[in-house]
Image (tube, rainbow, N blue to C red; front, side, top):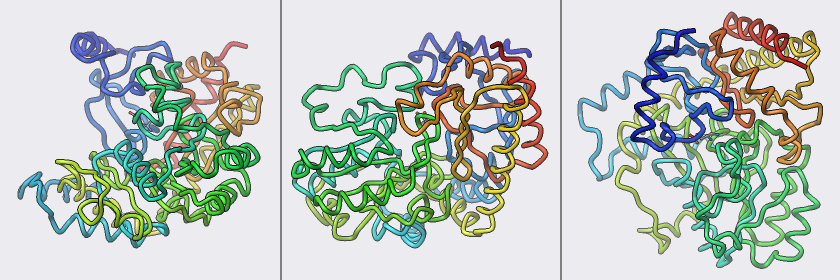
Length: 429
Ligand code: HOZ
């Protein structure tokens, strides 16, 4: 496989951009390669700058549920480009998108649009602290809620991939107000509440963590969090930046029937353009400036381009048949991969919730951060490389999800399974 142009571009990028990438997860460092530079995408396919084509299971890390260059999204963005890209003043489209989110997501009565998932989570935490008058935030080891200081403690995603789950630069004074709990461990969190209950402003959780690989919540776990937080006067925040509009039109909260107080979103609601949002009960959201005293702002918040792409995407997703098609395609892929690993005699623990999948190179059942960390990352690196060589673009890290999208065809899924069989067979014991 020719990678000459990617190599050249990466060399140049490293001179001006730290590590040559603008977000660490894009580097192929943990799989021992240089990243491929992408030239274009269409549907579920991407092409690199050397003309190699790949079936894309990263989908820009989640936003592209409808694939690259989806017709309706391109049309909406093009139309917007012709009338103006940003005004720093309200536009009607912001209300249209906000209304669509309110109608879709069970917990959301009001929503504030921002520009990234990180902004959404850090603002939701501020709001929770203001509402409860308490300081401490409980999060789960291996969950990733963007890169605000308070969340970069035992975090997942690139932080875990690159071996620094707790980032230097986070002041101790900040860290003392973040409490880490074990995902899927209700007893542990009950203990935390019995000793610090009065001080906890909120529990924030990815209802289906997708940043330490994919880890399904065990039966009753999310329900238990809901009951505990209610009992102790703390808020429950769902970080649905990945799961929102992916696991169902109403997100993970609709799928699991658990309604948080606040919900953070991003990715899909921007249709591939930069966006974030947080929303929840009117009583809480009304505390936000200018209707209340809690400050949060942004020059490009709710910018017309991202909002247009988001509206176009949600309009397509509102056809709920799409979710059952996604489910059957994802099940086909999961089944095929498990059979391929079995045929090749490899120990891989597969997880899947809807169109989020992961294969952990371990015999251990993965239920939390600790068990996710039993995965053999070197084996994953070899597997990744062999898949890439066969034209399959997976996340360059064991601790990320593979995303199935609407543009993946059965033929592409079957081709991926065939490639995986060859890759599993080629792994050394
Ligand atoms: N949640 C994404 C990765 N797990 C974020 C993408 C990024 O950090 O660039």
